[in-house]
Amino acid sequence: TIKYLLEKGAKVILSSHLGRPKGVTPKFSLAPLVPRLSELLGITVTKADDVIGPEVEKLVAALPNGSVLLLENVRFYKEEEKNEPE
Image 1 (cartoon, one colour):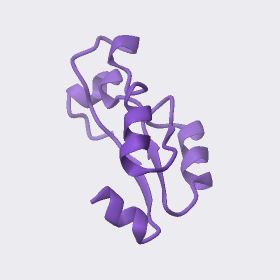
Image 2 (tube, one colour):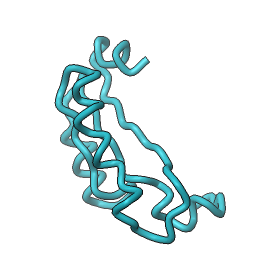
Image 3 (cartoon, rainbow, N blue to C red):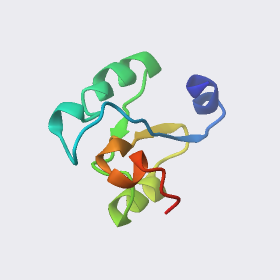
Image 4 (tube, rainbow, N blue to C red):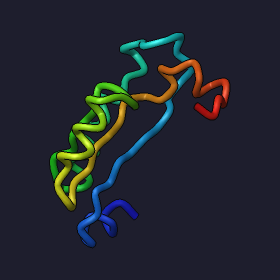
């Protein structure tokens, strides 16, 4: 699906959750996924250091068509585990 979207020129933003960290925990960062994901997709994948906020918005706005942005682990936010709508 990701390759199909890239072939069609989409900007792909990936989000995931990993583990049950208590706040930001380097052990649960998604950063180690970037090299393998880049290899599998045949392009350089950019990683955001956060999930929300102005820096992420800048990365999304600057993302070229046909590229991928991987957001950091959403589980770093306690609101994610509590399913808070905000």
